Length: 322
Image (tube, rainbow, N blue to C red; front, side, top):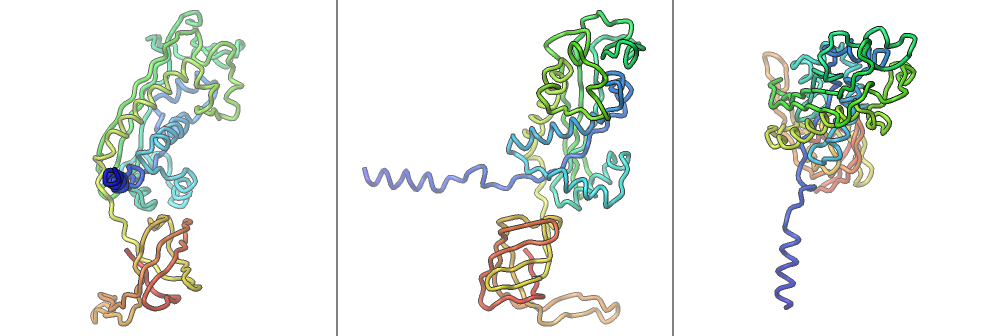
């Protein structure tokens, strides 16, 4: 019996958990909604950034799915602002890949909204009723028609090294219910005050349009999770310096922007001589002495903190790399 328990214990210990495996790191850009912008504006009574709304919903689904490590919105917005990229630039594969490289992610996800509205074929989309006297969400001339909401979105996974499109996911959603308005009875343009609508809210999800959007996003998220293994592993080269050394705690001058993560084990070296190209004066080789290792415990964008162990104390200016 004791032998059986020991074997069982060893079996449990040595099974690798899925959580312990490295997750692909991705960032998600706002979806392009230029194709359906006029229709969207007619529904909400104003220009609402539904591309950002659907992107936020997809982030939530992928984070909860646990397959990807998704970069937070704040870091993405900072990079876009620093690079001064316009909306049209972000939808270009090369620009998207550049953003991904700066973030240190394995891939960047972009997408487009290709359908957003009713399932009827009326050309009178929006009509004069929207934002007019009735202040109702609907389609002028067909206000009594029972229609379903339909939404279609396409997502593309882009390799940050080559700008190659690695995979594509397409999601289609159709509401189970029909109605005369897409946003439910009593909706008005005031619901989109300032052009802001929280598409992740339960209020929006309960509308027939929210049903269709939710289905489309879930479909895309599911496909992206199934295709996660197709992402090539991106080797992040980390090269930094010790900025402070107090006891066995080191502060490095590289952080999350350089790809450093909590748990990383980086080697610590001391540079002895630098060999320079006599023609250009550039450093072509460094003669380094291996000192030890630092295990990262804290990370922000510009720096990292770690516990050091080695043959001799580290000092300011020592190099760290993987």
